[in-house]
Image (cartoon, rainbow, N blue to C red; front, side, top):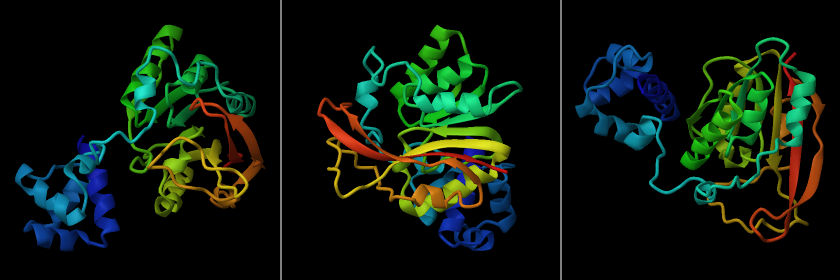
Length: 272
């Protein structure tokens, strides 16, 4: 909790264009106090939290790293509460590409961004990767843990919002399927810079994004927190990496019970 609060005070202070001195002045504390909050040495007095939250323009829940709203941020929360696995338990095809390109012949740290019910995260763990995973869905996290227990592997899984979570340690592989459209456009440059910074040399990013095409109708799912990507947008974040592949594909989908189509960019990029 302390580490998350420290990161968020630093992040939201900078987003509001406040120096440590300016924030300290508004709160009636020393700038050294603010510095200690942001490095996790101390925490703000509980009496200061409402005013701190107001000055940084975020709720106290969000300040501490929890969801900023009482509403579910995932339309799949209820779907994941059923005994069956909504997306099944077979890994996606991209998992095998990762396995081929960076096999776990040594300790390979892998992060699954938006793991859903855990089918891909558990696949990687079963094949010898050191897997960390997060998702916004409580039900998805519990099913990830359950599937890992059934297979007899460990996945370090936790709850986080993709727009708020930032890396602070290195991974060898970043993997994400079907969730990057939840990142607001104004956060993308910062988030991908963070992902790239905390990737080891020769590390791999295996990602996909849904893209908007004028000849494909919007999907039937009503996702209030989803944001469109454009063709080529994902690739531009990796102009300084080796891009092994980045095809655009169109595929049929029946996830909602209503047949529809998606356009998607699939990318494999390596830090060299």
